[in-house]
Image (cartoon, rainbow, N blue to C red):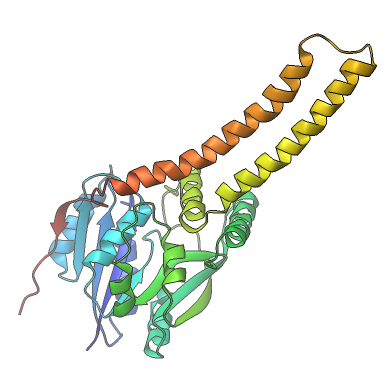
Length: 312
């Protein structure tokens, strides 16, 4: 009988874990698979680690990995994938927005021969229109910038064959955008659409700043075009600056409207100063990521692991 690992990163989800665990068991137990449920606690400050310890003691199928601090959602997923031992590995969130009732469908597609079963969120109940709009806009932008196509509405709810997981483990970059990594990794893939329900309890821990950082990781990990844009913008502003300079010379030589000193300030400071800061900011973002990579520090640290040995 084949085995399935279900990897669930959690952060301050004390209100959701018990119900999520019950729902996963309800849909997995009738299926002809051994399964393990791997919760990765990403530095929670509430009772999440204690709940995971209790579940692990009650059920040998549950493992709790307690990270040393908050490393972020993508590294928590990476940690779970590194520890997963199943023939197939499913990654999903523990707030019930990735419906456990879809697990049999993912496994059916896997049995059909697909090595990556990717879910696509076509909508989310109760999400403001602005968030939906900006999400759709982001995917359009990143697909224009990147050579790797990233499915609009893609989520981290997916099934990966063991061979895909082994290939994924060879990726060592620190700034991770797993949706792009899975899209670039290849293998035989299929897409399933779903409507994400509301959270079972609590509020989203994915703040605006986290979303911005996540979006920036996606762009800088899979595209060098921002650096090229900086060059083109520089060329454009150089032409504008030249035109403004010609206008300034005309005002100075052929009219009486010139104010002493204004020409130099207008042409050099307002145009070139802002342009230089823009270019330096883009270059600095890439240099900063090079700095993080060359240090070769561990991607994550696990402080504790909760599990109970299976009784023979």
